[in-house]
Length: 139
Ligand code: ZN
Image: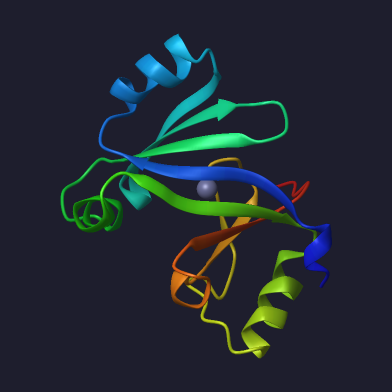
């Protein structure tokens, strides 16, 4: 695995209200809204904004006591995760695991974008949750 070849795909931001945020991010800053989607399995609503070389994910909890709701209660709104694009997610995950880094997902799952994704535990990453997303994965 070569970390240098990874690209930052998107930045996830935990917010209390996507609608309130979009009034600023979309209406005032003029960022392009790509989609708004509910992900019931994760109890979150996601809004994806497109920038030139990167996307921004605004994440809103749809249920109290969900993982994201607890995150916002504890840490407030703000940076939630960074997502790196990788080529072969399974091999990256096994390399990282071999080095003793804690993973949230040992096996990739399918993310909002339809790509294979997996999360690395923030405890080993300077407190920042890291998402890996496989490039060009076709379901
Ligand atoms: Zn993400």
